[in-house]
Length: 331
Image (cartoon, rainbow, N blue to C red):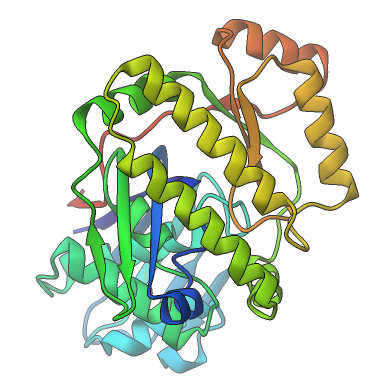
């Protein structure tokens, strides 16, 4: 049997950075809002017979292993070492985007891998257990200076918001009202992602942010904007839309003022997109310094595509929310 793990990528909208471990411990809590994207990463594996002498891994390259500790791929190495499985595996991985895309690529891959292993070895892990193990491996075993929003947003379908407590627990917030959710789903019909054609090292960006007290003050402001939107109690559709657009704009103004978020090339790209495409707002997705621009525009997809072709904006696509979360199956 072939076991497949499948996980969406994610789009972060409000509160990004307030989920970071150091921030939550220092400032008591963080709040994030975003959604899972209808683009996916896959982990496809076969459990090899007990008589096999080695395992096989195929990703951007191919490697064979006898001991999990010797695996070159850091995520696969730490996952297989952590679970200490009784058999070798043959693993193939692929996805829409790689790490450094700003779309939660490493979290998406990690979730899909653990999910496929859970199914293949009958580990009986719940979705929340898979999420928490993915967080533990990436933060504590790999030592990445990240938070938990990527794992939670990737694993759960559609729009969701999360509270990250100072006890390092994650609780889904229940106050994303039906009118808010419906408004966000409608607005997302006109969300587009435009590649910067530059992958970035999010670890380096996040490490530099952590080093400055000024960063903490700005992340507090970003968090409070997210809290403000979640607590906004006017349930009229157009009022929610106005307040959401203002919240994204205000949050982005703060974020792009932080060091290492935007370089000269990205600033030029940002200005070019702003000039070419009528929009409500534009913001960079992820930790910054590369990845994708997210654009909210009221013009239809055909006009967007025509503008992108005419002006050499290659790779633009609709940022449609996923209607499914983390899953696994057998083929």
